[in-house]
Amino acid sequence: MNSKIINGITPGGKRTVLAEVLPLNTPFLVQIFPVYNCNFRCNYCLHALPRNKHGYISDKVFMDINMYKKCIDDMSNFKNKLKMLRFAGIGEPLLHKEISEMIRYAKRKNVADSTDIVTNGALLNPDLSLSLIDAGLDKLRISIQGVSAESYSSVSNVKINFDKLVENIKFFYENRGRTNVYIKIIDCAFNNETEEQKFFDIFGGICDTIAIEHLTPTVKEINYEKLSKGKKLDMTQSGNSIMDSNICPQPFYMMQVNPDGAVVPCCSMTYPKTLGNVTEQCIESIWNDDEFNNFRRQLLNGVQEAGSTCSQCSLYKYGLFKEDTLDEYAENLKKLY
Image 1 (cartoon, rainbow, N blue to C red):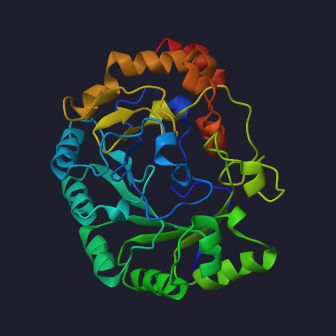
Image 2: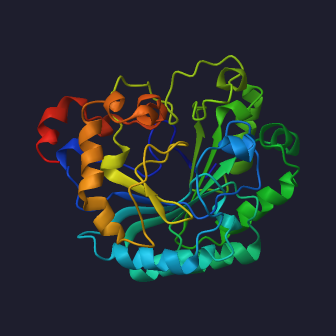
């Protein structure tokens, strides 16, 4: 196996102690949510539910390329480069016909240290792979849903040619140039320990880093206890112990731009509020304006003080690292916002 196993740590590498660098004049992460649609219907995801049960996500399915370029241009106004520009969200980024151009434009404008895509990988083919690599993609994060076509049918409710999927990932890896390939799978996709080893046997030689992530309860309408097959939901996505934190750190270091241009302060499945729209405002202004800072100040009193959405959300705890915890610094941080 050529790849490095990174269970228990973040795929982005060593994290900064967040409280020591706040407030940030530039977010560490901007998540671009380019497509509100998916070719999979994974049983742990919002797309497993009928569309009319999603609540408000986006008024558009595909992000307009000109709006996107305006957003990237605006990022030049930040005082520093982003640590990461990540294409993800509640959908499959590779469904966007201009995804390679989006990567190319961001790299040309040099707005982030790393430009990443999170994908299920099913749409990869040699042409798209070479296009993404040539565009300058820094990291391709592939979410695997099983170790056979039967597993994919059970977990994602799709019929795929599993051997072709592996072949296309292998092609990307062998032609990746400077692009890092990270492959991950959620533990609920396995039926036994034999399948865990099969996962490493199949994919360990065609990626740079690899991990088994843990099922986390992200959508309240989904029965995660049933999906977990008896395993306790007592670990973070990366496999660490859940910490007793009452402050969500996400709005302090990241923001998400939805397909319709709406800016939200986190990557939850239900938005606490919309803080602006990049069609009408500069993204740098949205990040630093009073409305965003007032929301952060509310959060420093605990999620229960930041509105009903935040008070009912535990998603942040499942993605929390010790470097992100803000509770013991809250009183001092309130003076800075």
